[in-house]
Image (cartoon, rainbow, N blue to C red):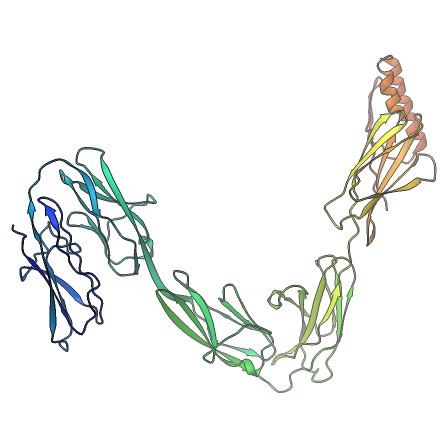
Length: 533
């Protein structure tokens, strides 16, 4: 077929100028010639192609409508009557049958589309023999078959695109029968307009209570949510809070001023949508008065007791109270509530954090609604003393014991340590020997090698002393070990029995974790741990 001739593009003067016009090309026989034509308008122009004033047969497998070599005609409503032509002439091709490496003349471009549109990814390749064009995804996922079509010599068309079609597509041009190939790639981004998964719902709430609206939307890219109150931008602050990326609107202690229509607008680059909901504030005469004389008292590092008195008016219909609790440093939306009987007028709040400020207020409730909130009161929990430290002892020689300790990660952190020691059968301790928190070792010297010693360690901080950790250690053991190098057998066993007898005399009520297995073997624990106050 003869494809030499003039290219003619027609468009209406009242439309915008062409963004891209076809240009003359020089193509080899069996090669590819590519012409581009692009224009925008409203309504969207319809593009068609002609060769020498005759429509091009786009069913010809050698022609691809996205890269055809003819002329295009743009049509629009009958209101436009004048037209203009732009002409480009093709140059007669020249024959060639010399082997040429595959070359991708035009590769896929990056495209951004909206769901349900059609994507055409170009891949125009030349070479001799004619290369084979194939497509794949860079992430290895299959392209699929539904709605997928390869046009002409290699363009990929995806009809009715969805978000799942987003990705990087790779066009490969292979020399037939070989591994020689060239590749090009382009990214397809499919956007989806914002749509609601859960629009806000109209609600009615008694005055003084909390109203919550939820608005959830999806889309690609992720929609941004904005709230309006009676058509005006809603600015959070005070008793109005937005959280969870604006998907939750919370209004605390609602009043008549909060009654309005609230709109949630979900918007992204592909589109926007909005939904409305009404807040109706229920107001009834005879609502209870405000609870008075609210007081808080710390009972321990983890508990605070809050008490109050009945309101001055409208108390006869009160059905109960609600105590509002939050850590003072937390935002208002982090508060939680505990219901209290109408006759109790106090509540102990448990499981709090030590050395932490908490803020409380109270509301009275009837079947018609809640009172206004009481005055807030703030109280701090007590601090914690340190937990008993871990204490280890080591007999260095007949007169020296090394004490090593580690602080516990539980309860309060220590500011320092105090060490005491004494002969096991005497009433008075030597000490205290004070250490800062960064010192964890001390050698006790000038001890009597024939005695058992009691060693006590206490961790302390600004809240007081923690429980003590106690160890019992005998220096006789060090002497006995050194004697084992000279005396064995009966003498060694006799030393152990003598040591056992000595401890039983010194501590007749002490439960010692050892057993005499045979007449010749004594197994015992060298150190005893007895936690005391």
